[in-house]
Picture 1 (cartoon, rainbow, N blue to C red):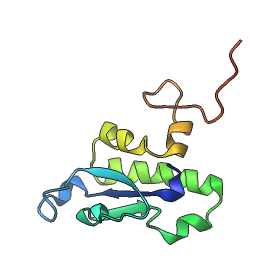
Picture 2 (tube, rainbow, N blue to C red):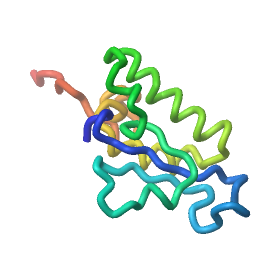
Picture 3 (cartoon, rainbow, N blue to C red):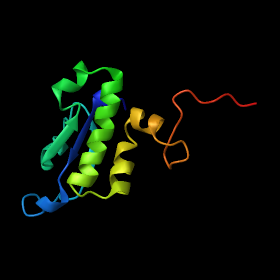
Length: 112
């Protein structure tokens, strides 16, 4: 799904006392979140932020990778868990190193 259509929801690992059922976990969901799954998590980013739509394409991509770093470094989630969740976002898959598991080419190279 496109970044502007994705809700990123997570609960910091250190907040286990606040939300033990989702502490250290992350989901990436399409908008709208009709089932309300994202409400089980403490933090949200992506399409849940109205500011995302006002950003340039480059700024949105930067925001995506800043969110990744924040979730991993500040909030203590496992990098591979976050990576697997972010694979649901097209812009993430197209911009990670091409030899990374789950990476894709937005415009596949022509084969000889």
